[in-house]
Image 1: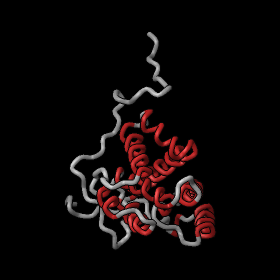
Image 2: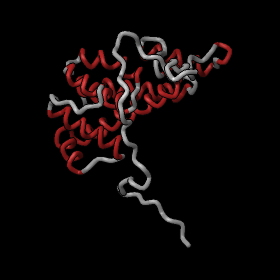
Image 3: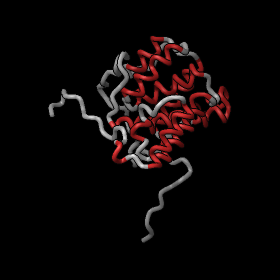
Length: 214
């Protein structure tokens, strides 16, 4: 296969001949809870029915009941999508972000891997928080203090929850190679991938690896 050919999807819909009562029950429960058939990341997740249902419930909280109004939760979701270059996640949430009032120039800057220049104070705090947490594996005192002062401890935890949840979904979607929704401009490729923390560079934050005793 040439590098220009689209990658084949993996972990697609559970086929009929492999559909167990547990799969069917999870599919029915999802439809009852969300009012729609299993879709997107939940299709590959259905291979693990209990995990799919638990993550769906977590997603319902993080999107609709967290400490953040939609224009801030969707902002965080866009950051997670860009950090993991997740095309399906981006294709689904970019239109929602615009609908809830996130400025198009901010959305475009995130897509291009640039720090937006016209962010609100709340967006700046969440941008710095997400970037540090994902890129460095922790958050500096200065960034943490700003986040707590503006959003409180619950807000900090919910921000971590949204980042972590959509990071997990991005991992599932990237592994499954799920096809993006039509009609949304795809994320452009970035010249450099975002840096991951190396073991030797990871900051000590309370837990230390113990060296074997001689």
